[in-house]
Length: 283
Image 1 (cartoon, rainbow, N blue to C red):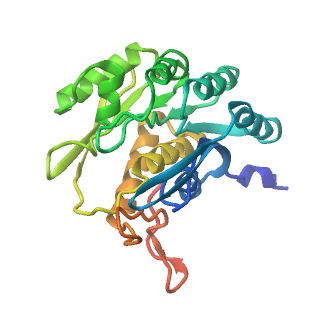
Image 2 (image 1 turned 180 degrees about the vertical axis):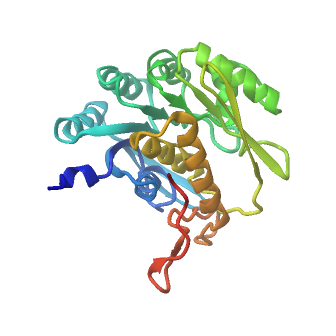
């Protein structure tokens, strides 16, 4: 008799903030995890009032309650991977780090969420220090954009060679591997993501899509990678699968709202006919 549990999707715990417009944060995490074959559980770090044009308000969850949410999941579900996103201050970073330090056997993807697309730094200096000293050493993979890589390493990322240097510097800080994303680069035609795992460099070169509907891409990529790791994929394969998935989601971005619309997390579905039109490849 077949064991029904063998067919269950891997549980991926997303520790991040809520986006009221649904395009980023926990909402994007859950959709990306589901789309990549996982089951999403959550610990919500903050409530935000935001839409496609910007954020108008943030209410942070108490650090102790964020940890209580995490423990409720860990105590009942077998978690196969973890993703962290928005962690607003040093107290929360320290609390989450302490919780994760007892579970280093679980693959953990950390999206630092510390510098906005505009380049504005979102975390106080004390929080950046806590991030570097306490959370980063727990990362199986860190996924900074070029601005975040600069803040963490002091290296200005203007080229692929700069991204390689930054990725290596991040691993020297203690992360297991670093994926420096090229989506915020200045080349109008191409973007390159650079992965350094402590042994070899891997590049993903992809065409820069002409669209403004990119809200939540960082959340989506990190959650997709976590889901692929939760399914047992090796790191390079997990990133490759997630990267291809994100490119499709961006290419089919949704023209919702007055600003930067969200990506389409289920871009292969034919919504009018309610059937699968083109499934992303996954082996």
